[in-house]
Each structure stands twice: as C-alpha cells, then as structure tokens.
Length: 86
Image (tube, rainbow, N blue to C red; front, side, top):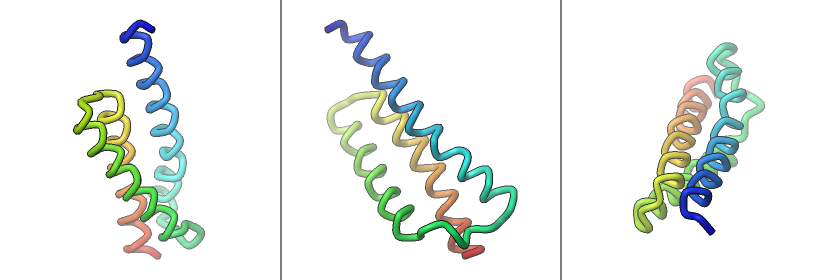
C-alpha cells in the first residue's frame, strides 16, 4: 500500500480521535463544571495518550506523534480544570 495513503489514513484517524475531546474541553472551559467528569478515566486516558506519543517518537511516525501530542494537551486541560473545579 502507498505510504502517503497510509500516512493520510493515520492523520485522518488521529484527527477524528483528537477532535472528539474538543466538545468536552469547550464545555468545561465555558461552564467551569467538572462534577460529572471521571478523574480516573481522564487520568488513564492521559497516561495512555502519553504512551502513544512516546511510541510514535520511538517508531518515528508523525501521524501518531501529532495526533497524540494534541490529544494529550486537550486532555491535560480537562484534567487541570477537574482538579481546580472538581
């Protein structure tokens, strides 16, 4: 399979999973309410995404690195808000 097609597939998949965090992040930012957010779930998600980012660097795959780096920042924002406004 063509490597450009494979990279495009990875970027699209990464975009979809990363963008899925945005509505929750926006809601938390606007309302400052985090009562219904699971600290355990977002903590584990952050850890998993951090590992995916490291994995991406180790195998030198930009789609994995980019998507998971952005996801990690968005998840970290939600976690910080949860800790502040819990």
